[in-house]
Image (cartoon, rainbow, N blue to C red; front, side, top):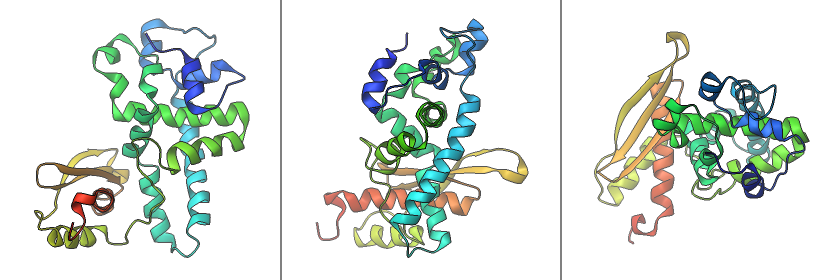
Amino acid sequence: MPAPLEELERRTGYSFRDPALLQRALTHKSYLSDNGTGPFSPLDDNEQLEFLGDAILGFLASESLYHAFPAYPEGKLSRLKGHVVSASHLAEVALALDLGAYLLLGRGEEMNRGRVKPALLANALEALIAAIHLDGGLEPCREFVDRFVLSAAPGAGSLLAPVPLDAKSELQELAQALRLPIPRYSIVQEKGPEHSKIFTVEARIGKDLTATGEGSSKKVASQQAAAILLQTLQSQPEYQPGG
């Protein structure tokens, strides 16, 4: 059974005027396949809200990064935005909010650990962003995104730190300075049609240091993975040169 939605409202600091919107944002299509309806009627799944939330998040991330880094070229802003809105980061934010505990899932998804599936969590977070926008307008939506997605959300790290233009080179230089193994990259997933594939690449140093990135090309995805792993190394004292 999902946790009470009032708990989630307390976590996020936003109380819905229309609780049906919040419930819809947390309803996976598998639940309706099994049950046909939910506690609110009419009730749809969260896929349309996910579509809207993706667009809203993209706009708010672009706006925030534009103001935060006025001297950055368009390409660097785009790479930084790609990290901010990546499915891997959104899933981390959703885990930090324990969003999975509030989802309505079908029996199959429940048995297959749907409450901790990264893609499902990322989609639910986008749907939640859309629900807040529809319920209260852009301002509370912006506050939510700033607090939980763009800022240092618990367990998600700070995303407004500059991403290097060539993260792979910087990561390799830092690894060499720290006498660590050379970074290795591998494609872990390809999804989507041939003309618009999304690649997921894992960056790995040794056995314990890993990060994943997504992008429309292997190059973009590997740069994003390198940037995340570089940020990890730079934020931990034991990996500082001379430390």
